[in-house]
Structure formats: structure tokens, C-alpha cells
Image (cartoon, rainbow, N blue to C red; front, side):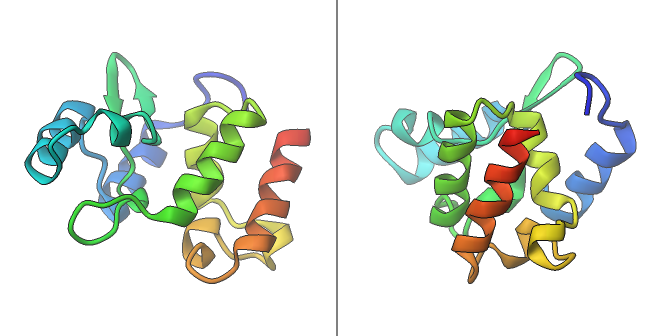
Length: 124
């Protein structure tokens, strides 16, 4: 995947399925939930589309907390130097390492295979 190669249709599909709120919307919501939102803000998966910064909704649990498995995977992606946008696309793309499932669909119960799949992405 080349920089800038993510289509508008892909971003719209993410917006439709999971939500894709602007970073400032997320900051405002977190400010309502916690006294200091900055530690949470530093853990967010962000995508950069044109001039905007957005946060894929798959990383949030009901109530606005971050999903711990997604957070752990994203932290590892950063260690592997996988850009935010590519991590997001990986989360919604069927994976051979996951038997054709998307990481976003199995992140609740298959952490070890997800780690292996992410490591494979980092080697590409």
C-alpha cells in the first residue's frame, strides 16, 4: 500500500460500519468522561484523510472507553513503525493469518493470532 493509496470509498465504508469521528469530537467526548483526557488521547488510533484527523470507531467500547485489545495491537503497530492509516486498513482487511477473517471481527477473542498477523504486516 502506497501513501495516499487509500480510497475515499474505503474511508466511507469505515465511517458507515464503525463511525469515524473527527479528533476534536473525540477529545470533547473524552473530556466529558474523564478529568484529564490527554493520556487516552495519546493511545488513539488516528487516520489522516486530506487535511482532517479522525478516529476509527472500532477502537471504542460502549461508553467511550478504549478497547484494550485494539489499544495493545496499536501500540505494537507503532513499535513496528506501521503508520496509523495502514493499521486501520489492516484492521478491516481479511487476513490469511486469521483464516480470512478481518482483525476487527476477531479482536475480542483471538489476541495471539492477531499479534502474529500484525507482525506479518510489519515485515512487509
